[in-house]
Length: 330
Image (cartoon, rainbow, N blue to C red; front, side, top):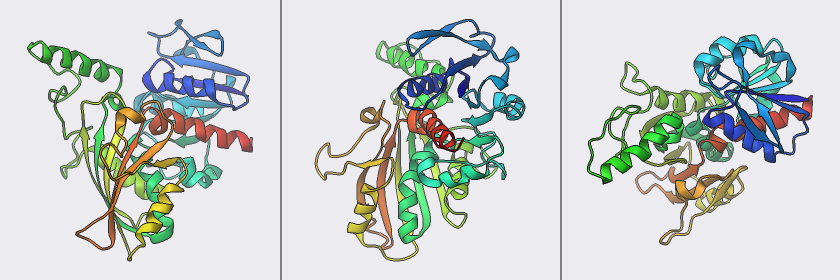
């Protein structure tokens, strides 16, 4: 079996390479593919240099599974062509809400992989870490409503925004004028309550992704409302989540359920520093849950704090986990 990565030179593409380097998935060759600008460059993988191929000339039949990590426009144009010759696991938003395309988080709904037609979609990074915590709670108590506020790292917007956070921070500390190129306002020492384009009702597309994807993955009956905020953090998304159940719950059982949640770890000591921050989650495959407490305004609700590396579980790691499930069945 062979694998390929489209968009191999980007943030998510490089993270996918790193995860495959450590993975125990048996495969023969890895093909790296990107735009003409990156073609010809070499990336080290398992003690050898692999030359990046030009997407325009690449033969998709060379790999049985192909990771797309190059954005919606590339996915729109190339994934349907690729799917005639390979199984596509796409990290963009383009296919997520298409009815015939499975939207998969393996710990949550791996059964949906039975229904793919050679295109499988990776959920939004902020949706993914949230549903990991919601799924076992929903199985036990049935969730009625979710209110989530996200605090999303600049790495979710790409490499240029990451570089801009660093340059703006330097300029701010040097009392220089700050010009924002990749953000609507200054991001250094600031928060921006705006990710993606605005919809007609005032929500952004990022907020609507969280609503619609959660419903598709878990249950159409769950009500979800989101506020998504870009914060001056390099890597790692954080979420404050209020979860309301249909009925009363047993709080000790809530703790037990979350401690047993696949892919998650509870770090919740009620003392200074007894919680996880995005800096601590960077580079870690685990999604962390902290600040678990009863909602003192609603006897049927709880509050939790969820943190995960958005480039790993929020993107590259999840695609590799999907591939691991597929390999078992091929």
